[in-house]
Length: 356
Length: 283
Image 1 (tube, rainbow over the protein chains, first blue to last red):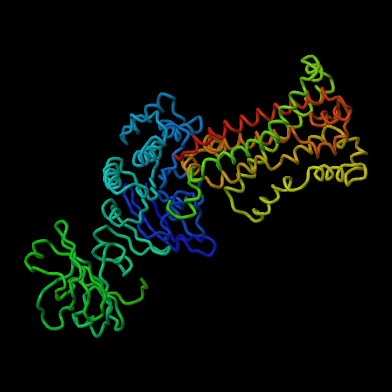
Image 2 (image 1 turned 180 degrees about the vertical axis):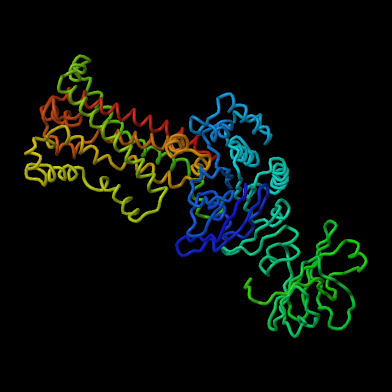
């Protein structure tokens, strides 16, 4: 089944939660809704499920207008952030619930329900826990029960609201890889909400980045990471160094640095913001004129294969981060307090219209 | 933990004799004002022996008072249970205009004196009241009859279930219900399978408080009942009549029933509190 959201808007009082968002999710696709808290991603998800109704716009499920349909009629599976398991029911009863509430004509026999639930509990590797109550399970186990409960009714689409948000870092990583494998197995159109860019980029087929109710960019993880549509997306997808400068007749001037305007930038003259990732910083002892920025090494964090440097610009005093491989670091033989020259590779330049 | 304010609260800081004095005062106070009166009720009730005790309770007027009390409180508890559920549901699940007003109104019966509550019904249904003439013309008797007693009981016990449920349901997440909704459950099914099991202890607690109050109500019922023996007397009213007739043994015998009821309520309340405490864990 496919999902199409067209020009959806939702207000809560005077707060605009979702502002003119259009998005398509193809059959069998896993899409991440990524954004900071309050960006409207959960509201959008709840509107797709029918738990919230949009003020305007259309929601198409399988090319059929479902904007006004009840949640039950949409045949969605929904996994809540805090699992929302029925706390007075056993794990078995939790998973069986969706089958038991069907109208009598469509209901499976008792034996079929038992088989089906056992099959789902097998899928999430919790067969042994069918007689337990939710509060006897760990967070990761509860989340898997929630997933089994959502999947047992064979929904045509799966929605997950911050599915790993309440788990600790290690379980989180395991569970998201597991979710990816599960999705490859059952292949059902899925949308999951997250504020964790790493999670979104690792798990999803496509990532939709939201900010202040608006959709900023949609694309494959590679696309959005390599070609961010604007400063917000670039900033949100990872650590970043910010350079304030000016665009002047096809060149960018940042402090002493004066380089050609990269192709990706719109070339209007005026103030501009340049961005470069920490691993895109060239560090050297000497430099050609106007090709680098002078900075002092303030800190060296050298655990693991990547050495992280914190540098202070000599001209503006702002801090920069740089990452380089241990080999390169050894080659340069950098010392704390040393003055070096920093040049961003692959600088992204955006006109200064985003306040971050 | 180490702030000065917290230190004061840490147990065992006071000298032993201070602790003993405080405990003794508390126990003494409790004995004089609670245990002694309760014990005296039972002592007086059996002062003339078992025979008199059983006879006073088997007296037709006493039995009729028991019946009326059970009837009035049965109706009052049932209706207030339904109302309390609906009010708590509406208040905790929806936002609407006048919500705060509704919450305050629910508390009204607790704020006004029971006698005034009774007088409200006299004002409404009495012969010179707003609906008095109409009722008289149609031969409907509310005041000084069973309906009046029932109405007064309902009014006075109105807030108990709702007040217990509202804060409890407001504190609960609605995610479980939404989960059931998405899985295709009907509203009735959601209520009986998801909501009710989660609020059952809180609900039962409210019901117990409500029944205790309903059976013990004196003021409001006294105003509207008319004290007709064997007809509109509830247990508390019956006790009063016997007492005024200097029939102490009988008065205390009937009163011991009410006291027993109070003790049962207390135990039930305690059990539920413990049960609810254990079951309060989150899913």
